[in-house]
Image (cartoon, rainbow, N blue to C red; front, side, top):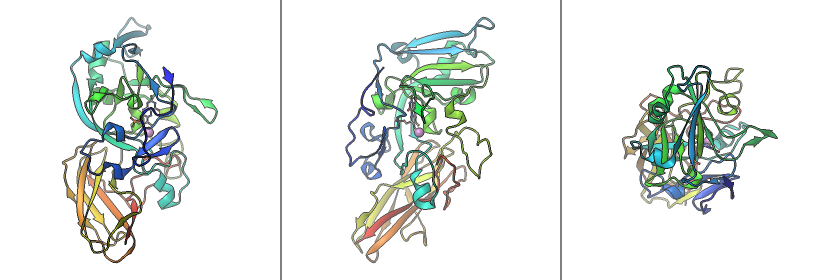
Length: 367
Ligand code: MTE
Ligand code: MO
């Protein structure tokens, strides 16, 4: 596992905003693209550097007390890349979205101090993933009736945070989700998985926070006991005054959000008809309604939805707009999902700034 540049793919500044080893998609770069985020525009969230791995050398090892075997003895089963590709393949359109997407707005809109990458709304992408069902692989490996948790682990470098070595990125997944709709993905939008997105194989956990979708997966512990790692104990839970003292349950589904396909500070000529474009998404249901305000939240109009979305993907939308008098204006978009959740005006804060879901005030200027 060679660790070179933090991110391997080129990151033209007009497409990406850099944050250390991470890069978010600029929303204006999505204008005119289709439902799926092109691979070269897809955000990258890396705890360390992107390892450049060879599919020919890659093995996936499943091991642990949740596999069938002699009592008291841990069993292990391995799959090579070609063996995995020989299993029945499935394709699925789904987003990967960082739990911290929108975190920067806790500070910018609500004046909260939160830790972590100050993403705007570009830590999300939707791709067409192809791979095998994790359920098929678990069944082939010999799942014991006592298995409760599975924990995929990445082959990237150990993550050192605040001087402490937390080990390789790994996060337990309840067996029920693992058997439901989780993929071991080897293709992204019809191409072999790019290095930055987990080549040769990543886990893809639809609708859930991005951390569940472990990249460069090398092994999966299958356990008859609940599993713990920093990624489900101290990280990726909600802490703070509004939450239980020992934190919320580990984060699962993503919240409802919306974004305009516009740069911050976009300029619009006064009196000239425009069409505003954007996208909304949720991990809990399809998007059923999007309302847009072009006057800072005083009036709202329904946007036209262009996609019938499911939970875990997005719907594109548009709305005609004739800008009025010159000056600064805030554009707002507010989505509702089929689970009945509507984006609130303010998000309930948590110390690590996860799951921002409030309506974002997008600044533009009429000139
Ligand atoms: N898997 C490994 N092995 N290492 C990582 O750093 N980052 C996680 C997840 N899987 C990560 C990982 C996080 S926090 C997110 S949001 C997604 O990958 C980002 O996926 P992407 O880089 O393909 O967009
Ligand atoms: Mo993330």
